[in-house]
Amino acid sequence: MIKTEYLTKSREKEYEDFLVKSSQSSLYYSLKYRDFLKSFIEIEDKFIIALVENKIVGAFPAYLKINPKYGNVLNSSCFYGSHGGAVIDESLPEVIKTKVKKALLAQFLTLEKEYDCISSTIVSSPFEKDLDFYRENYPFSFNNHRLAQILELPPQGKNRDYSETFLQSLPSSSLRRNIRRAKRHPDIKIFPSEDLDQWQKFWQIHQENMLSLSAVPKPFSMLLSLKKNFTFGQDYRIYLAELNGEIISGLLVIYFNKTAEYFMPAVKSEHRKLQTNTLIIFQSMVDAAERGCQYYNFGGTSKSQQSLYEFKARWGSKDLNYEYFVKYNREISYFKKIGRENIAQTYEYFFVVPFDLLTNA
Image (tube, rainbow, N blue to C red; front, side, top):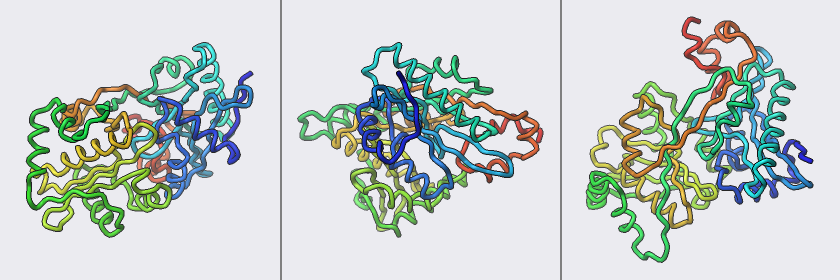
């Protein structure tokens, strides 16, 4: 018999052990990531677990944004680039796997109803092999295809000079040249940093990059939460590049299980030609492989970001599909009445409704 319940403190160790055994789990399912989010976003977490014979065989994280004025919103995960959905014990027979998934999804829908959510969204994982499950079992109103670019890192083995071997294995000759050129520059220094003053400079570059693209930057409070909830070196690294003592680029990489997440890059526009961002990515990949990671997740790339897609593809990354499944429980006119700006401010970091549908608001 399959039983579902919400994760409690007493089962957290078992839950984390369950995730580590799964090839489909990722950072976004982890409890450290949950605590990280809750340190800078006002949310409620409801992690659904499935039990067979009192053992965890499935999990489905969920986050609520409570708002008495306009209504509550439910997401399988929140914040930029995160994803969720069901993760199932891979040793189960296929028939049982499907039953466990259905039980988890049913509880997700019960949660939505219990909190009278105006919308709910499931963002599937790029490692999810059965997207048809959601298409066939989740009564979504809208779905949107996305693309994740993930590199399978070459195994380190007993290679003493893994860095050079890895460099030679990169499929793009221009990428190899750019990395070597940046390495040879006498005034460029690449290093990991846990210094908050340096993080502030890194974040300011990130902010400039995002605003130049008319995009929303990640808040500095996110980095403070990172420091509070994760362990530097063990769970994440912030790589920085200096040119004659000036920080000109950086990258935040977060590790979980066998995957390194390319989480927040930044580079000063006037120094892009120096390719320090490329060198940092390369160094972070080498370090990730040396610590036992099998995958380097560049994250999602939209169809409109052609140059960014091509840059990530040059590393040899593979395209993996994932989807947003959005279920709205009010008429579109209701969301239009709230208004796009109001939704963005009230439900920050949550997906509520496709803004394309609100263009006539």
